[in-house]
Image 1 (cartoon, rainbow, N blue to C red):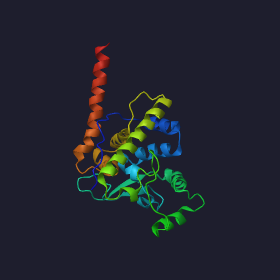
Image 2: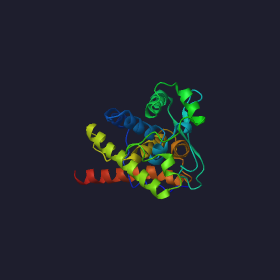
Image 3: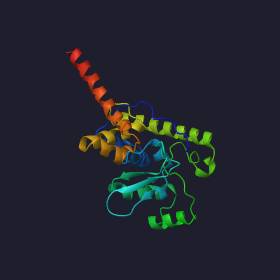
Image 4: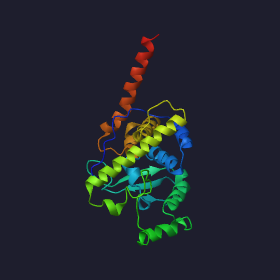
Length: 231
């Protein structure tokens, strides 16, 4: 499996309303949709940056499925993983993919058929640092270049996040990992830790999922202590 940059020690979490504020403040459809996918599906930044049309299962009328291939999954066993995405993003996602490939004149089903048959070369669609930096053909079997490209893309995404957080007057340090932490916390609060692990965390060990929630508790303790000591 490919080595990936670490996510860092981001302990910030956002409410759904705050995420919507960021989506609304984004300066491009790509950025707004990227934020929405990271939150709704709990995607890791590497998964978003490598997302390709064939990963997305549009069948049915419930949640969309995103099948992350084994060479892009982060779990210790590197098995393929399934992430779920709210159906409300289907049309926006299809329109964005067609636009990113310059295939706006095709129906999405026709586009997918051409990808499957090799008439259109499949590649990642969420590229922020310039076309070519994440091209599959250029990076295949070149781990150092792939790592460097992923690092550049993640930095550009986080730079954009900082700008839209300022635009949305959100007084929090927001990174790509913030959305994953936020949706895990929300699912845990609405259901339980096990569901949060299974539905969005996709961690091999549930103790990893628990750390997302425990970090928030420690942050709350610090805030409480600061407030009481100043009163």
